[in-house]
Image (cartoon, rainbow, N blue to C red; front, side, top):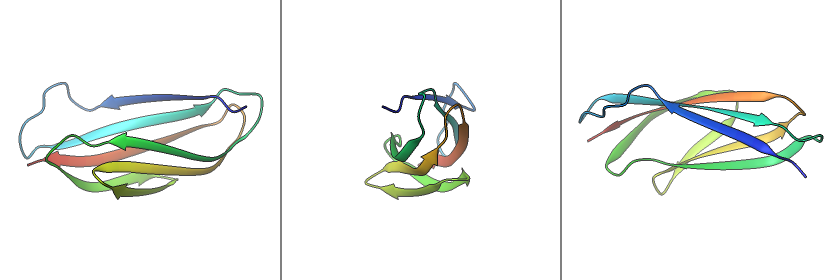
Length: 88
């Protein structure tokens, strides 16, 4: 079946109150077949406020989680998505 690699990095190693933070995730299909209807859930830190998501995939916020939906990720392809939020 499909195999995915997910790598997530933050734009800082120190978090300050009210500072805008960015996490960037790279999702890559390493399997020999296309991945279909992939859903990735990324928990947001407590007391955070979602600002925006930039990337070419569907996304939404539910119960303090960022949910990314990828309809199809072809063999060997990679998608990148950035999530912007701040801590209050």
